[in-house]
Length: 208
Length: 266
Image (cartoon, rainbow over all chains, first blue to last red; front, side, top):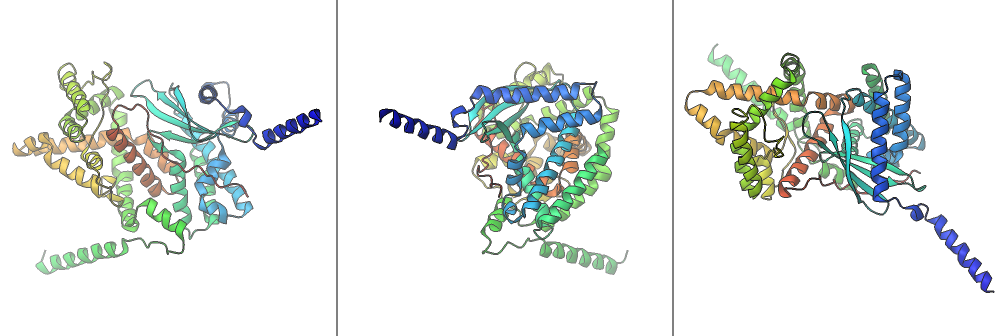
């Protein structure tokens, strides 16, 4: 009888543990910081590796980007109220295009890489499953640029970036404002946003 | 030119201005769409159509004149020279920084401003070399729009100024007052040295445009709607600067409050 109660209790604990995934492995401040340090290290070594062809470099870059950023989460935040009115197909295509635009944008930005390094300063808790990592970009010349990384732990316990804040300017908020206007100037249609995104990707590819 | 022709031109200008003003107001969304209404208020741009027209004008002027001039400046003057010019111009702003530091109640920052001015004007040879920063006394800017904000004056609706770009009534008034009360400008204007005043204005415009070359190119290239991306960036940056003035000495930038609930995937 006692054993049975014990078993029940054990099963219950197991159920609770399964129902709240990740809670048992909440990330620490150190983990949040080293996540950003590792990302900066990998990005810089991808850019600095002269042995890679442009195609390989872009592939590596995309893999790094997709694994570090919560693109579906950022994408939903950017579309906000239009996300709910979009059909599942539109949502899927939006996320694909949003990923492409981000990868092309960041690949282009890293082309101007000039020996900058990232120094992390610390991490503070942001809600239940979030961290904000403070850091600064150290340049060869000029004052350091303060950058904050907003991280969220997903259901599997992995840390993902949901926003980058440079000198107080949030990437996610800027995207949302930009994309909301692009939808509104086209009569609130998600399809015209997708068309504008496709055109933007072609422009970025042609320029890159 | 006859008086009649002049009158006709005058009437046309008045009609054009009236048309811009009439077309200038954005229509607020209906009350039965609370989300659209909240967004309209959050964007804070009731004059959007007129602002867009001015933005367009500025962008054309920039594309064909300011940006090429800034690019020319970058290719002709080496980085070292550009830094000296930027340092010199920044040092000339000291009286304004100092007055605003005080009016914002940041007495110790005002002290830093004075200390920098003394070091840079003497050891930095009339300010062409910012020697204070390597000595661990980095500079900061403070302006009248920021001071007004610290005093609790609201920004008012978003405004795009001809030539000067993104602003709002509070910051525009600050800009205008600073231009009038700047002691150096005042001295120059009263001693028939207006050409120095305009040279300073011109060179500082080119120097600042050069500093923003890469950032603005990047925003224009990657945004879907350049206008609204700039609006969002200006307003966010501005509130961060105001926060810096209200909380001097904090090394980290306060994080904008993004509401956390990201809509779930269906």
